[in-house]
Image (cartoon, rainbow, N blue to C red; front, side, top):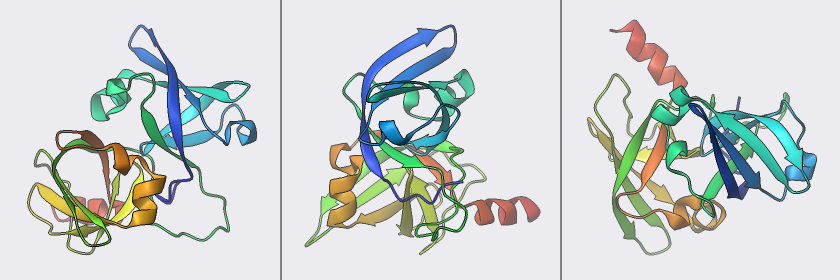
Length: 192
């Protein structure tokens, strides 16, 4: 389980294909604190640490993960939002995030406001929905929904979040990972 509160921005240092798998090696300031078998969210995708060497660790994404997320589009040098799993007894500063991406979305609009940025995302309509002032996870970041529509929504990004996540690298047309609120998903399924 995660909270959607990003700890660091990691840098992709190498990518290696092995059949349908992608081994992603990351450099982060917290690599020395990680251990093999640990769960770490990468742009909101929960992956298991499989190797550690110096300040670089490696995780493996399988085809299902690559098909449902933006991890298959990574290149060396790309910046990735990193969050370690939640510790039992910690504060839940964001919202309950599983690290299981539901689908991707495209950034369709970025507007710099007086003190913040507004990002708009469009996604393929599905059973997944957003609600006004509800929670959504974008690239692993727990955010509050603004302007909820059938297949789009906006989020307001404060300067701290902009500076400490990969939102600063997003452009119109960028693909992001979405994880919809787990409580909303259960309610939608019950009413289907």
